[in-house]
Length: 100
Image (cartoon, rainbow, N blue to C red; front, side, top):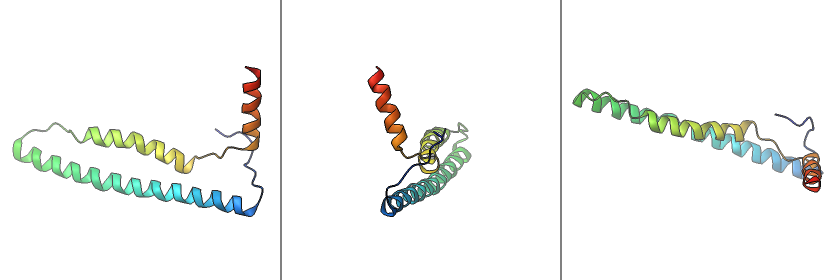
């Protein structure tokens, strides 16, 4: 959801700082996604080895896969759908608080 207003930056340094923060959020998300696939892939391999040797086929890796997956969705949202707070957002919230 967008507010229809682009964030305003008083100077190039503020814009650069926001760009650096955005790049860090995206990098951190990609690292988390990589770890998600590596760790959960390893859990599936462990499950398969145990299932083949013990004939117990309950797919228990679904719990860490699903749990971490939910967190990953929120991380993606922060990294790629992050919206800065604009002066218009602040004014709107201040007016809302005045009206209460």
